Image 1 (tube, one colour):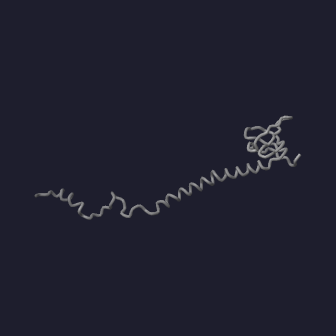
Image 2: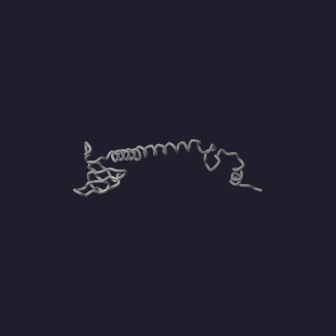
Image 3: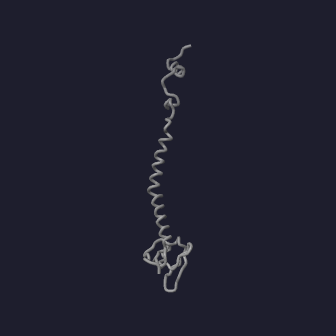
Length: 124
């Protein structure tokens, strides 16, 4: 039987050890062991930037607003979240009574107070 040189090479290729890497060109050692660690570093950096840019300033502003609301007293001129301006007439458990005009008093939740325009220096 006569075998052509091309067919001989094709038939012999699998039987020779060859230096081609296994798995279609991937390194024989497999993936590196530090890939999870390499992925974790950018994630931690992104979370840190997110914390310092978004969460921390919002938390500070919320604490400042809570301190402002807890220090409300009679005579303070305030602005509510709705835009209503008034003078604090009374503060009770979570409710602030505002005088918006002569003889006109409205009750709102203390949480509606967004800003103090003028703070009374002493209680009247």
